[in-house]
Image 1: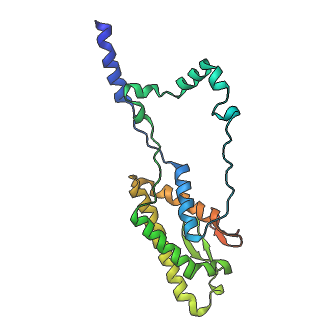
Image 2: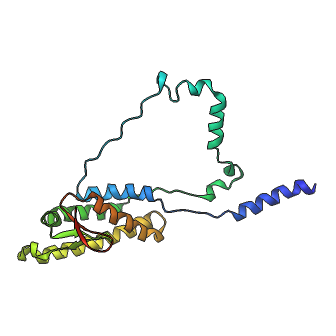
Image 3: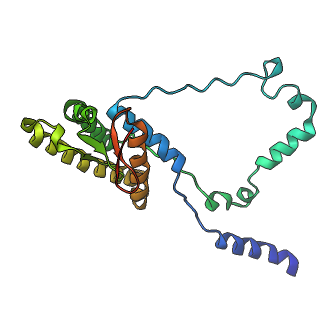
Length: 212
């Protein structure tokens, strides 16, 4: 009786010791950043992953999945989340997606895209502007901006910076983790540079300007 009564007590203690660990989904954030950034500055041509070919016989797994049931049971067993059977597996680790499809985020994206095409792109092409290492736009060489355009360009750069900060905050909040704002900013800062076209300028980690 003592041994039987100890089982539920141990299970309760084990459950109580489990810590919910929601880690920052860096890979999902990078995909979201790429989608957002390339809609603002223009899609970059990328290689399309080839479709997976069906295995021999036109069925997934080929003959091995049919003729080796022991192997298949081993694979199945390895995929079972045994902790979830006692109700604690889902609390052990979580990997949320990053959503950028809220109306607020899409409104900011639309403003940034229109501003980039209408006021900023030509000055990236000339080398006057560049992407900073903090995920914003900066004037790199004001001399390359015609005097008559400088006030408007400076205003556009400031507006783009405000919208950038707003979208990083909005993405973190929209995904239920305001504390991720700094990490979201870092991921986006890298993506602006990765998606920049050849000849555009960007800041390295030390703040120095480099041409892509």
